[in-house]
Each structure stands twice: as structure tokens, then as C-alpha cells.
Length: 259
Image (cartoon, rainbow, N blue to C red; front, side):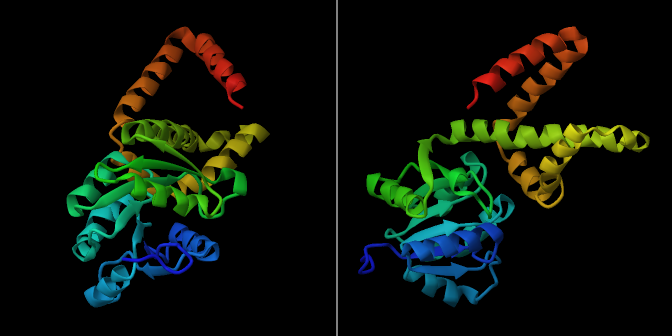
């Protein structure tokens, strides 16, 4: 498949009606990519339209929830060929890469935009993971796809990605859920909520309401999460045994060191 005259490969976004898919579609189109879209639901448009859209695309970006990824792969994979590069944007990488490479014998690159559907420019970082059959050309096209819309990209491994996201997102979500669950069981003490606690609540509210199902889904398939949760539980046990001051001092050193 030849590239369009402007040199940008044609792109299909699967899940283009979702919040992330729609936002990325607009940005890629403004950057010059020929963009087409498919809905995440397998029945939308029928197999004929799916085949037509994918036939004129080179890059195929899956912007679908992790819990529907395997189902969507079953629909689109029969229409993919050697000319395609398949990417995803799920918040976990080990299992999704395994699923994509099992469904599609071609080139696969995992991507994770570390931002939501309304990012500030300085927030637009993307983690990239090279699939086992992705050669240098495919990796460069994947990297340019995000760099051309202003993203800073970095390469990592699936394991390191899932460890980092397990800490930054899944464990953070778990800690917030547990903390506010404890508050929910003492509704008679809401008069004691401090301004700093209310700021904590506002920061966590969207994760615990709008995005709750998403966080629970990608946390459930992160192979690094159980070990992180075990480590976190041991820290809480240490605090309960009288080690809170030492734990707080270690945390303070980290907070001071992070830019």
C-alpha cells in the first residue's frame, strides 16, 4: 500500500465515537493524516464496511476498552494484512499485546497515552511498547503518529509499563477507593472534613464515578497489580504496627525528590 501524496499513512480509528477515539481522530486529522473511523461495536456497519475501511488504511488504532478488545479483534483481524500496523491505547500492555499478536500475525505496537480526552499540551506523553514482529519502520510510524500531534513519546517494555501504571493509576485508584469507602461508613463524621480532604475528594471524584468501570477493568488484567497490592498492604500493616513515622519520612523524601 502506497502512502498518500503528503506522505502520511492512512489511519483507521476503531472506537472513533468514544471520548479518546474522537479526540485523537480530530488531532490526527488536523495534523494531516487521512482518518477514517469504525465504531467499537462489532455489528456497526457490517463486515463489508469494516473491510472497505481497513483496506484503505495502513495504521489501525484500537481506541476501545480493554474488556472489549478481544471481541473487537475477532471482528477486524480477518480484514488485516501484511501492510497494516495494529496499535492500541489501552492502559495495560502485557495481555493486550498478547491478544493482538494472537489475533493478527502482522506488526503490532502497543501505545498508552498518559492523558485523558482533554489534555493540556504539557501532559501529552505516550508510552510505546514494541511488539515481537514490529520492525524499525513500524515503530517509527507509530512514534511519528503521536509526535505529529504534539506528544512526547518514550519506549518501554510491557512489564515495566504495567508496573508503572499499576503504581500510578491502579494502586492510586485502589487507595482512593479504600479511603473514601472508609469515609462512607462514617457518614456522621462529615462535619470534620477539612479543606485539604475536600481537595483530595475533588481530585478523586471523577475516577471513582465516571471512570470507575474503566479503572476496575484495566486493573483486573494488569499482571503486576497483585504484587503491588501485596506490597502496599505490607506498608499498611507496618504502619499499624507502629511504623508510621518511618513510612512518612520515606514518603517525604520521595515527594521532595520528584520534580
